[in-house]
Length: 401
Image (tube, rainbow, N blue to C red; front, side, top):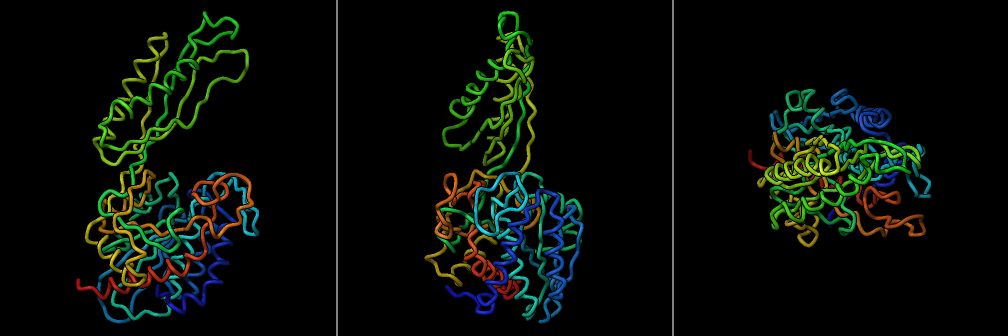
């Protein structure tokens, strides 16, 4: 593994920055402090800063000095945190109750800042690098919001790249996959209406809670009996809301959840099967059901050429033994998919390790996985990820157009 010495020397500085961001998490479209910090650093380094894309997003534009080429590459980092508690007890734990950088976006931001800092001092390339710091990846479709605000019209990119840390994948190893690499992410809400009444006289009601319980089990047949056996589909009911008193049968119950698929046909089939169940099952009991289905993020599909290119750079810099080109598809969603619908590019994975960077004497289970209250980004990745972004950009401009 060949890390850039100058980047290695700055590891402590950018670890401090990453941990500062971790301690001050901000939710989707509220990344004001983080955006201010990023903008301030980029400006200090002489990088042109443009703010207000997707509300709190920004782009740092760095033009090379080795020529006048119009070629441009985009590199993206997400900045938002999650609305969840943190159980960690280290010094940089979240200072805001109920908010946590539980997915490593603090690390993604710090990696890109590290690369931008180095490249600002080494501009011997022919073209333009657009450093894209994006808000609201966690369900807010910040990528689409930035595009709606003219991201690619104002800052054209021939190709775009992004990464995500991957727990349980060896530290500093790289994962690539051509084609569909991550699932579409849709949300649903099911409203079940019945007839409320006294809990001691259930025969005079149409109990939506009982219908909801039956509905949850019936929805499992969408995956087990309505989809093709070769097609992966995830359908999870994650919320159940009904009633306010122990002796009152409510007149309504609400179920919410998510659906993940890897292609449009599977998504269509899943929604149609759900709609049939939701509309038919409550009628058996004298109630009614309504399905609201929100198709959020599309499936993320990497472009073949850019994926081969990105993998080859990783192999050259870090060795083939650290690069997996057939990385398994992920059922998680990612709004980087919107970029890839318009611009050639690749979204890759960087191993966050198996928790060896953490103290295991923590509350709860599994301090390794993302969206876990014990998660923390592995700071050992900062020089690795930054070196990769630098070498990728340099190779992009050195490549024949």
